[in-house]
Amino acid sequence: MDRPFIFSETAKMAWRQSQFRDGVSVKDLGTSDGQSMQLVRFEPGVQFPWHRHAGPEFIYVLEGEVTQRGWRLGPGDAGIAPANTEEDDFFSEKEATFVLVYTD
Image (cartoon, rainbow, N blue to C red; front, side):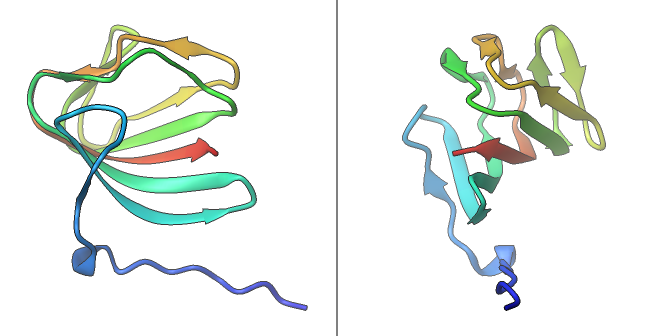
């Protein structure tokens, strides 16, 4: 039996405040097989709190700029955090929008 595909019309979705940090808004794009995808928007000056990656985490920057592990990532850049890594230095000095895929 075929499993249903999941589609998101992001332009019609409202941004919601992230539960992890003020100044971070998200659009939940879908979840399947223990993986989730979000569109994430950081306000200027936001730093994400310490967290551990249960599985690999992928980001793809669409607009603005973020810094991850000392690397500045701009539009078209990607970052991958392997499973079981810890992170406390993910931030944006300017506003940024990126796609995030993570393990639930």
